[in-house]
Image (cartoon, rainbow, N blue to C red):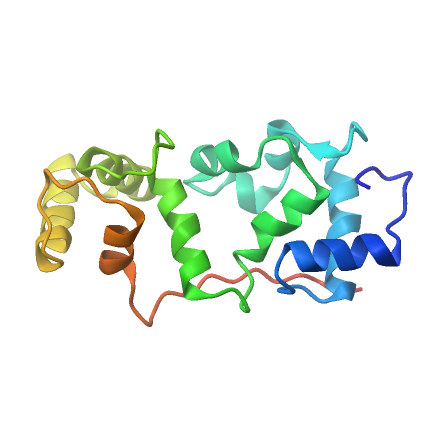
Length: 175
C-alpha cells in the first residue's frame, strides 16, 4: 500500500479508516490515497520532506519546518492519521495534541516559554517585535496561572489553549 502501481483493497481502506478513528469516509480515504500517490513521486511508499514541500499550502505555511518533523517519511496509513487531526470530525483534544507537538520543539513532551516565543516568531515574522511577542505570551500565561518560568506539559497546554473557538479543518475533495 502506498505507491501508484498498487491499488487499495477494501481491507486496506477499512484498516486505514480504523487507524484514523473513522474520521474519514471510505471515499475520502480513496481520494487521499490518490493524492498520496501523486506526492510519492519516487513510488517508495512514503512521502519525503521534499515531496511534502511540493504542496503549495504546506510550503507557504509559517510552521512548515515544524510540521516537517512530524510528516517526513510517513507511509500512507500515517499520512492519513496525520491529516485526520485536521478533519472537522476530529476532537478538540486531538487538535490540541497536534498543536502541542508543533510547540514542543525538542520533542520531549514539554513546552517552555522559549518554545512559545519561537513558534510565535514563526507565525508573526516581522509584524511583531521580540518584546511584543514576549509581552503577549507573558499575559496569556499569567491569565492561565502560569509564568515565563513554567514548563508546560500537555495538560498545562490544554488549560491555556482549550477554548470553544479553536477550529482546524482540511477539505478532502471527493472526485
